[in-house]
Image (cartoon, rainbow, N blue to C red; front, side, top):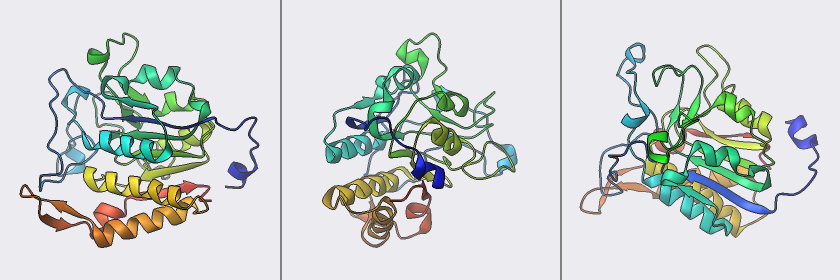
Length: 266
């Protein structure tokens, strides 16, 4: 924390936001069911009930996440930005060739993967659009921890709205030693990360509420904005059934508690 606060910027980022969301994982991907459902959708690879029997999965088998489009667009609107990378534009190539050092807030809303979720995946990663869709010939559609170390950021806040983004680099390692450590080394001052699989609708409600509250009160610290957003989701939000009526409350900690602010909370 002392190091994060002592680093002097050579320049202030001129642009408010860059958001990556709703990537396309296969050519046959169809729109996922939105808010009118009682099912719980997670932003992680499918896995067996027993962790030891976790299913190997390929990128094309990941479920689409249409809520992430609304999430990224809502935050961009609050921040007054149009810098969005959605669907096929949410690609590995666009992450690497964009000038992310000029953005104050950077967001990834997608599937978070840990080693073993996909065949041959040995490090934490974020799932981006499949190269079979984007036409990229030198990409695998994964933004891995190793690749994040190579990014050049100057961000006040990086939001990783996906599952298990606070996980370690491997089994038995410290929390936030995977994607979290990589983004700090790349130049982030604070991270919003998740400690377990997140449900997609409640994640959207939580992150957008954080930025709405900061926009309404620019003096509000990031940590306090997150606390207030959690209370709102816990007390006032609920999942909607097919009839549009509340199906169940988001009061359970699985919906509002997975996210943690790491780094400089001010």
